[in-house]
Length: 239
Image (cartoon, rainbow, N blue to C red; front, side):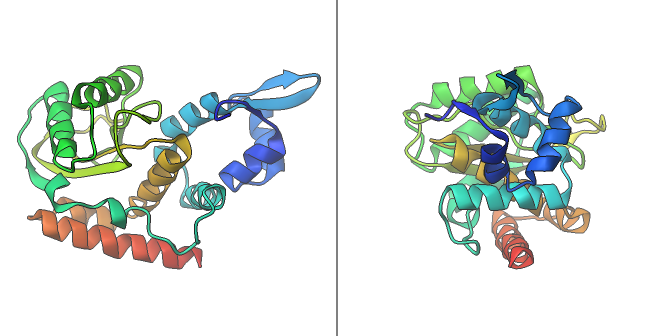
């Protein structure tokens, strides 16, 4: 039952966080919750949405907690790479040519189609565009992580990741008001894997010097090598 209500302890396990800190956040209105019979309850769908909107501004420590929580939920080894297996040369490029947000999203979805993992191109595009209409996925630093609000269990065969750099930055709704030129489109069949990928990507991007190196890549192969290297560093930090 993916969208049932969670207790504080269950949410703490999900996020790898301290239950007392979550209680304080709930009391301050910093995390969506309801009181049922005097007890705090957290709707999983609302928490998923909250995480998607806030991961880009979380501290490195908090992202590490979410990453660890998702690793435990998915019963995966702590040292398992989850981004590396998704990197496909046909879906990594430094040659995005779109000049507008919607055309760029179409270009990203077309790259996702090259993986052979997308059954329904129009459904993926609609889901990604719908998410952007609600809240931009752009972050500071010229980065955006377009993704659907909800899992796509029937529209894709497996989790998919597109990594792409635009030849020129475009207006994408970044909090810092700057142009965006580095994009990570991702979609999954279940929300736990989806949140795990988002948390790991955000952890990897939590290094300005490394992000600058990624911006400077001239080939897709360079980007893949840097991403593999960076994920290994992040995993080592958690050991």
